Amino acid sequence: MSWKIWKDAKSRAEEEYQKGINERNKGNIDEAIKHFQNAAEIALGSNDPSLKEKGILASVMASMYQVIKQPYVTVFEKLKLSLIELLKLNPNVELDLALPYKIKALDLVREIDILKDIYVLPQINLNEIHKYNNAEAIANNYETVAKELLSYDKENFLVRDLLKLGKPMDIAFKLLALSRIIKALIIVSEEPGKAAELYSEALGYLTQLQDHETMDFAKKKLEETSKATKCWICGRNVQGENVHFIYLQTTMTPFIKRSYRSDAPDIFIEKDSATYIAVCKSCYSAMYNLSDEISKYYYQLAIKALKEVEARLLLEIEQLKREIRSIKISLSR
Ligand SMILES: [Zn+2]
Image (tube, rainbow, N blue to C red):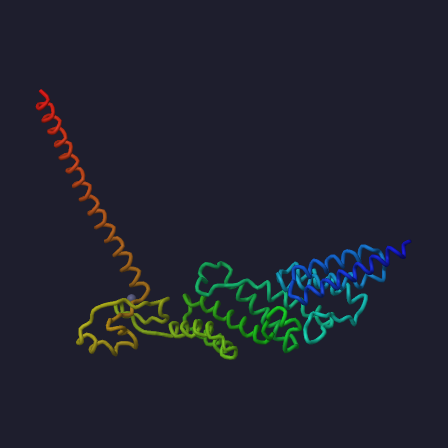
């Protein structure tokens, strides 16, 4: 009797496992996961010791495809636990992941931690760095994972095609570049010279990756941060365009241009037939605040004048209404 139950469980588990493989081969990942989970449930619930390995293998397959669908920490951890269980039963077990090569479970388990670390890294928008209060921690985090990747002794990840991952070394370089850029963006308000060094380092990593988008960003920042000139208004030395100084449009006679061009490189620039002067952040904000106050003053004056006009008009309307009423009364008599 019990033999029959075992046999049923065995063939049912085998059938579900095979369905999982078939659906996987057709690219129906959700269906495949469901069948692998069924196979695991049947095999592990049957109490037949000979089905244990199949059951755990089915769990591994279910978790593996879940990782591909949603690479979350918990899913990675579940996969790792199942792989360790499987290895206890069979240290040489290989996985069929529909790749041109079989993957040894032992090799895969070694890869899980580093994959997990890559996927849990927070994303950062370099253009909005001021919105993050933990940007420095993120930069350090990127660097730690980059170091881990550099010491990973494989040229490629085993599951690179499934997870669409680049080479460990390339990911490491990208993370190192990003960590330098983030740190530069943070430090530029204090030390533009140091920020320029960090952008150069980042560019060194990015050149090897041919990552043009990030490279253009770092190049532009390096150019701006390295730019040093004098403030046209106060004459102080400044470095770091768009951080410590900005360009404001102005009008300049040929005489002024000729006389002061050599005061400092880029003290004024000409673009699209307009002239712009370099103005340090302090002069700029003093002017900005003052013009803000002046605009407010004139705004209030204008509002006051409008209110006076309004009051006078209302008075006149009242007067007219009264006159109309008295005309109506005299006509009706
Ligand atoms: Zn100034």
